[in-house]
View (cartoon, rainbow, N blue to C red):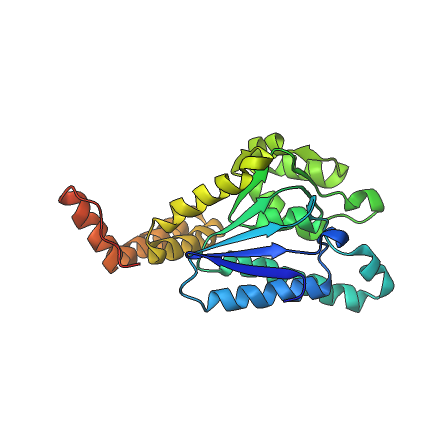
Length: 256
């Protein structure tokens, strides 16, 4: 699809933002291309991990401000942000983990994209900001996943100052999971992919769904939901095999 390239690698689907000349900006067309890929992956049982990558020096510069300024109406903006929010939610609702592979700058909705992914591996050259406030536009939608990754004060500081943080600071604040030198970024991402692929797909899918659902519940309700999920998971063939393998002191023989 135009602007987004999909490559399949042994159980992993790599989605690459491929408009480096446009700084991989999230035009309406780019958002739709991502949505179509995510919808297709949701129906593909062969996919067990998604990696979201990009070409060029910029991971994603956020929304295309020229496109936005060309159609100045509240109805248009409401449709655009609803379209983007649906795509962002699709990342969380996929039954498989989504890893952001961040090779360069991620700003505004590009930083939102990183925060919305389940995991993130960043190059040491990457930088992050929600900088639209400098233009008089508070990054409200990026603030949703950002405030769920960072502490509230850290997230709000980024939102009200628009200042950049580097990859090591992003790691310290919880925006990314791992940082690697630029020439080791691919290998570090592949290591994380391999670790996930070594686990049963059904257990990861059940766990991901519960992980996000319980976070919106009160403590007692979260424990109730988690207990129900574990009981269902325990009756799954993969868990029964894994526990039996532990008892018998042998490697589990997963079917998938």
